[in-house]
Length: 173
Image 1 (cartoon, rainbow, N blue to C red):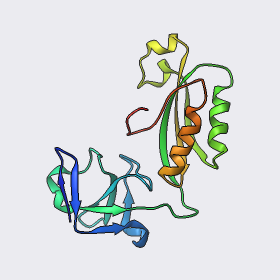
Image 2 (cartoon, helix red, strand yellow):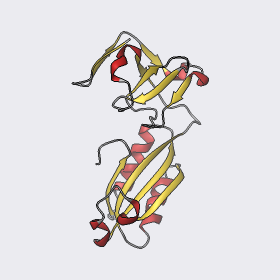
Image 3 (spheres, one colour):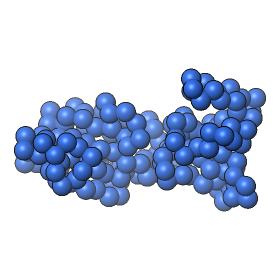
């Protein structure tokens, strides 16, 4: 049983579950926070629907039911990938999309979806940036876990045209 002090984000547990040992049909990876192996995650024991996996700080975890939360260990498994979304702010220059996708492809990561364009067309970013030559990109990547995602984001950050890159649901870095 996980005991959490949500005001200080402190949790302790007498039990840790290894997700890789459970039946896949009993686990739901929640789309509200799209956790991936390597993230700090918790399992929420649902009523009749198995276990829902959330990032530790997900707002959708019912605060009033902390007795239904279990600490979780989740390591990548060879051959399995998980969708996760990233956002990028870049200098709007010719060829930048190619540079970003090459950095991702060099790490053997598939790009499942993408939305590219000036900030004014993509929302979530100050529209004034569009007039300053800043582009906004959102991509869904298929990664094996947090380590592979961090490697890809590190490579993207090395590109001189990149202003900011972050996983959706995390603080911008």
